[in-house]
Image (cartoon, rainbow, N blue to C red; front, side):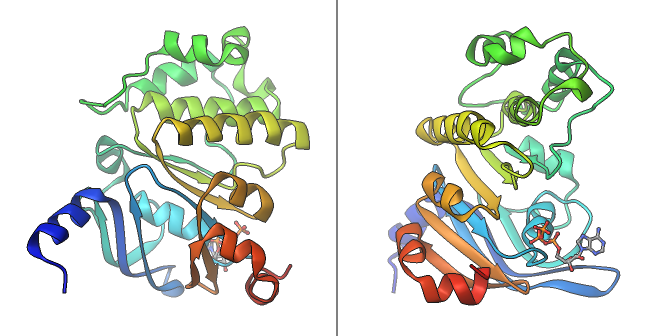
Length: 249
Ligand SMILES: Nc1ncnc2c1ncn2[C@@H]1O[C@H](COP(=O)(O)OP(=O)(O)OP(=O)(O)O)[C@@H](O)[C@H]1O
């Protein structure tokens, strides 16, 4: 059994804890008893076939559409049932599938709006100018309508919006979807890899196994709404039978 001190240390190291999470829509259950946790600064890939429940899990963490039961704790606080804006204030940002940027607004306006969601005491404070310095492509496009951006630029903007909320856990729902190999290399591998290096906690839902495993040291595989693998990425990469059975590869 863990000593009280070890339990305290382990609670302090845990950013997100999900236990016995069920989620669904209008009575149709999609997630069944999902358990996992994320340590501060850990990058975890969330894998699974189409319809396995990855987006449902990402949305459930953020207080969005699915109805849920079970435990979701962020930094030790039980947040199940909280609305998204309250969860955002704890430092969680979701970069949704399809990116969630406002296509009718300019890049600059999108960034201004994201900053309104900002939490109060971040460890690192991003402001619009630091975003433009660090992501010169966005600076070049600042007055462009977001709807006119390329897929890679839109993904970059969505990530920048997450940073401006001063999040320290960023949940990315299929970031590589619809991007060219070059955009995947530059935006996803480049930017997300950098966030990882800077100590952000990352949960990356992906269909692209090789890419997800490049970015994350640990993988979680969902199949029909159940966690069927939770372990080192290298183990999953080496286990062709598991990939075939649960990812259809
Ligand atoms: N808003 C919704 N209303 C009703 N059912 C939904 C909704 N969103 C998803 N579902 C259903 O929940 C199940 C899981 O879908 P989900 O999008 O979570 O899977 P996924 O692993 O993210 O797949 P994909 O890669 O296709 O996005 C599917 O059967 C889907 O039809």
